Length: 364
Ligand code: AMP
Ligand code: MG
Image 1: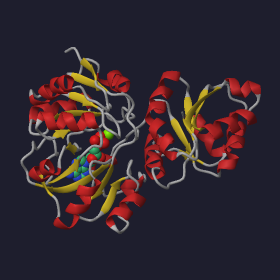
Image 2: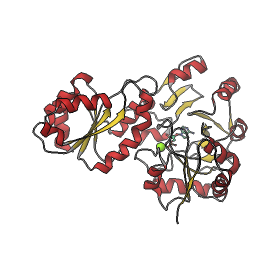
Image 3: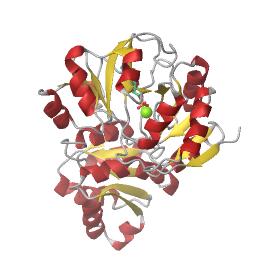
Image 4: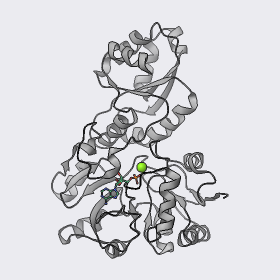
């Protein structure tokens, strides 16, 4: 199969091109499309055969349901029950990077929702996505456009790397604005099951109370009960072993200097512009030659860090260094989601001093 690439203007989507992609969806094909969070790989949510192909090309476990994307509240209410008490706030909030787990009306493909009696539903705040769903006239089941376990695609180029000639259409509308997946709220328990682009502080403002924060939402290693099946799998990880620094920030340059002093291995530091500079200044000229600095953005601008995170993790693998170190970020606002992704991307390899880092370096 040859993938068709469609460049579509994010602000003024060309109707003819939208029609090509919508037709592909209706014909049971796979279409990679942009959203404000990350790129999605979409299929008609009524079509089991098409949904099965999503799991196949992503190499995704079939017990891990897909988020169902809608273009209107009416479309959401055709497939799921929106609790009366939440209807108004959802109406006000959507379209937004927030997904709600709702009771299913059981009319969609069982493959799309992994046979659950609930559905994760979202209305994306992206003109191209909304026009596509609207034109297709069906809800679109779409997980993130990455091969399972790997970082999510935030640009069409990433999706091309993962799925060239494995999907029918890839729409390119430029980089995804948020760069991190949607926040998932289980409305039955008013609980956060996945931290994401929409902050819990904002959710609390809209709903008048703070959602319950589950361990899985934080990406904790031993989160036992996974309400959201996908959260239990390895996720977001580059191929390059990633080590997450969890100690005091001011000590990080010293820790890196001490642990890598005698080593000739090439490695990367992934982190804020400020920390890249501090480390560069601390290391000797000889040590600096072994380090590849990959800046995520300004530490005070967590939105920028989130926007760049997956793009830089995908880039990291192209540098062919033997390992990478990443700094921690404050868990406020989108920082909660950033830290969730970093915990998982690092495979829960944390260190807070030079001794621990050296111990990892013997293993990887
Ligand atoms: P992705 O689209 O790749 O970002 O992954 C979608 C996430 O939504 C996964 O973690 C799924 O487990 C979760 N999800 C989808 N449907 C449901 C559902 N009905 N209940 C709980 N979690 C869900
Ligand atoms: Mg995903």
